[in-house]
Length: 176
Image (cartoon, helix red, strand yellow):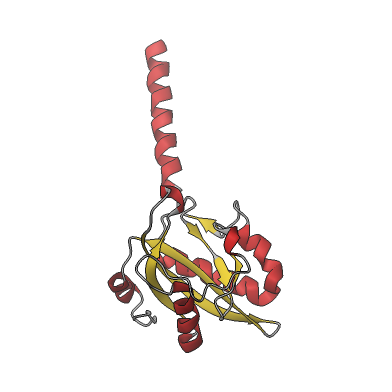
């Protein structure tokens, strides 16, 4: 009886493990783009009132085990809301360069001014990996509410522009 109970219990644990891991969202370009599109709809409807929903660490805009998130800035590269680095809120990031010299926030603004939306490659810290920087590409889109421009963005790691070109051949990709 003990052996049978142990076998059943072990089987349930294994099933639970695989079920739980099957529900973890993978951070993909499709997911990042979908989250940005959803955030833009919310921003268009609510403006700054949407920031709390977008920033909520347990909400729909924190995804893929914490690696995925939405930040909001304006077209002058001033950060309205960054859920991972709140110290950036209110700062003009137009002169900020990553470790490779890429002016990423300015590039986000530029692609949105020119195309309305697009992808920008750069390097950035990875929340689940601690210190260091990692290759990242973000999808950004601009939306208006009450005469004000909001640029929403989300990115993912370990994806290169060639991957984006294959998956989204019609999307703009920032190239220096």
